Length: 431
Image (cartoon, rainbow, N blue to C red; front, side, top):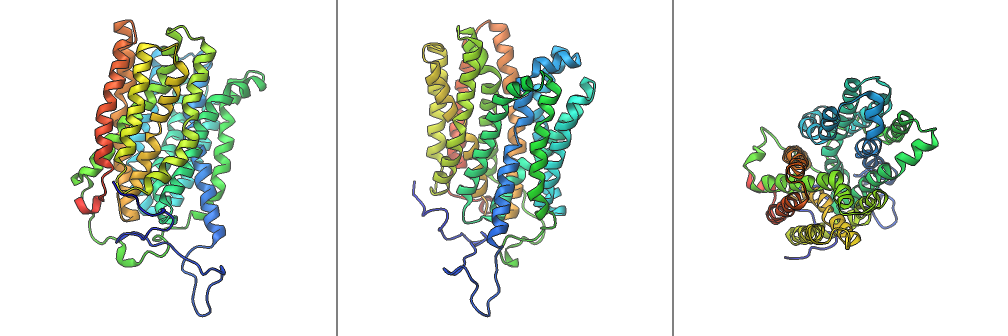
């Protein structure tokens, strides 16, 4: 394992967009045209990344906080509600596949802008559709916007900040974690402040998505190459099949297994604590602590990972935290509840690590688009059965021994996949 120079100063590899540099005075020398975007424009892109990331999870976690009220209000059966909770990873997998083709045709900025519009419309409309079918359709619209934006966030980072992949990945990963925790924490109090109207409480999240549309309108017409990247680096002819890359498969497996653990944690951890004798309020607070751990660590981990030639040791550490956390849930769920919640919160930070490796395992922006789409779409497909299987094991075994055993067992292949995905190589080498 070697340590690289700071990701903001390292020399790009062959095919990677070089960083644009400016003279110390901040002014372009006489007779030389500026080759990169202006600082204000980069700040606008940065604001767009943060606002977009804040909107990539509230559609899910705000609904979870009011699921009982939504079921009663729309007359949903338990089966329909179960389908509703399993729709997000399915939509992420199906719609995420569309992102590379859309980005090639319209540009990544335009697609993310359209994604924010879809999220805003879907969230604003779904509470007022008047039935379960309309609610599901509007939710699918919002999730489609989230899916394509999920895929293209690493692409935007690679395009506009090729010399700061770790820093910018950490910034939007932190914003994503903040949006996740914020929607879970404030949706119910916000609904209570609106005279208990769950419709208004859910629809208000559409306002945040509408605000996120604004900075992306400046990137709608941007369809060119990364700043400073010569035309010779643009791929000509058909691209090699990414399925030939072992690193791509390892990264997809790592992404899928960490997503499995995250959805199991969000869906079932409060019930584990409640069955162990912890009060409902405390169980919800423990979940909030687990989710909140992702806010600072989602910024730190990508920065550290981008300075290392091999990210495998970080994947091993995070999986080990998960193993200890699950062992604690099995042996003493109530006595050490806060410790296990903290450890599982650290383990859940495999998500920003996966996003960082997507940006590092390809030399070009085009490669990042393909790798991001493949790893995330395949990964979300892998994650679908996990939460359902935990529920089946819990129902048929009558306890949490077998489900927790399954959760712990999944940490081992996640660890192996992380080691393989973290090796210092690119998909271009393998394809």
